Image (cartoon, rainbow, N blue to C red; front, side):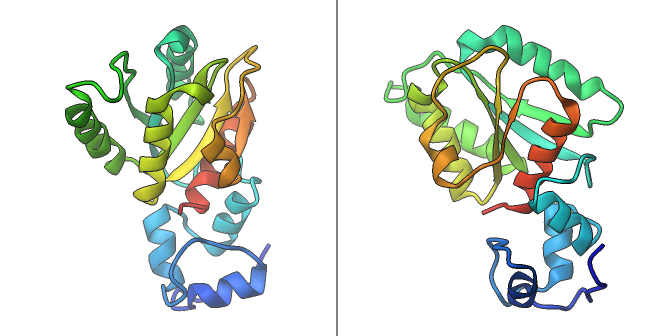
Length: 193
């Protein structure tokens, strides 16, 4: 348990005291950051930041970034939203359209609008995910918009992890363990850029 910290404590003080980078302005007040990221306390935020929070602090709106080739496993992942301990809503799409197609800019505009309404982008990592331009674009857009980003490796996949996930040291879970999946989603919420 962390010592009690007032809501008007500045983020730069919290970061220095606990050795974390919350990716927020130093003059932001803790209470405002907790509200924006959906946490009830500093303790909860720090547990999530360290990947140790195995329950949802609040309901999370999630955008799934994936390949259409992985749709069968994605459907299975979506079914998990019915589990009693998962508090998530999905907002996602899968595209067969080439990113530089004549419809590319319209599609980007629509996807950007969806990502803006979410708090977390989950990249479902399959065997070919790292080489898809749309996945790269969705992850970069999420980073630009300050969303939490994490990855979940699909069952039996051995493909390369998208470079952006490595660059930002995004938390990544293996398929299956629900508590681990929750922990990486909450970690991404705590570390939003």
